[in-house]
Amino acid sequence: MKIQSVEFQGSFGYPEPLPAGRRPEVVFFGRSNVGKSSLINTLMGRGGIARVSKTPGKTRMANFFVINKEFVFVDMPGYGYAKVSKSEIERLRRLREQYLDSDDRKSAVVQLIDARHLPTELDVESVESILDSGRPLCLAFTKVDKVAKSSQRETLTRALERLDVRPDVGVVPFSSVSGQGKAELWAWIETHLGQ
Image 1 (cartoon, rainbow, N blue to C red):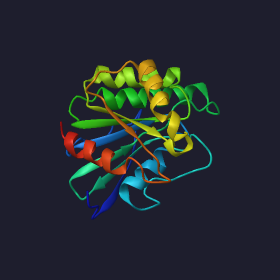
Image 2: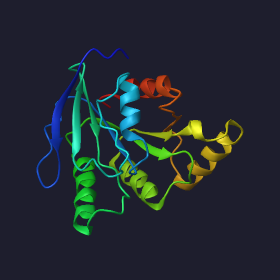
Image 3: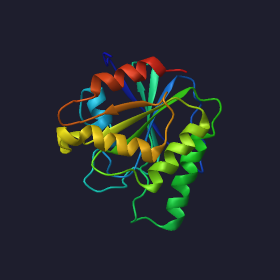
Image 4: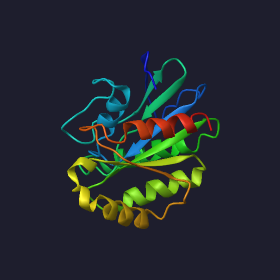
């Protein structure tokens, strides 16, 4: 995929309405500090599109980016960050539901999982809600460069067993450091855009 233009459409989300889904979308879900912004910037081939922070939980709204005037990347707030109020945790949960309950959106979902650890209970719940929405799903296992090559297969197998996903779910080991998985994730995105 050749990136010719990236336009920031805006930040949206509960309790305000989301923008109309006029273009196909790819939405990115994941735990705080899982490397979502780094993954998006790696896919774009440039830094600074999605803001990378050393402090987890900085993204509080759904950020929409129009790519090549053809489709949209949606950077959702991370979940599982403890240093926010209960009311904010609830608002972020409702924002994720707000997105997944939007029947008018043609979107595919990339769920990020930290390859270094077994999926958390919140990861499992996120994957279940995505599958329930009927949207195409790809699991991007981030920070795979920090897992020994000899144990990567076993690590991913255990993670997939915990997540209990269907065979049609995409699986991509990904590293924003080495670029591993970038081509494979783009291939999955291009296949599922607008489905």
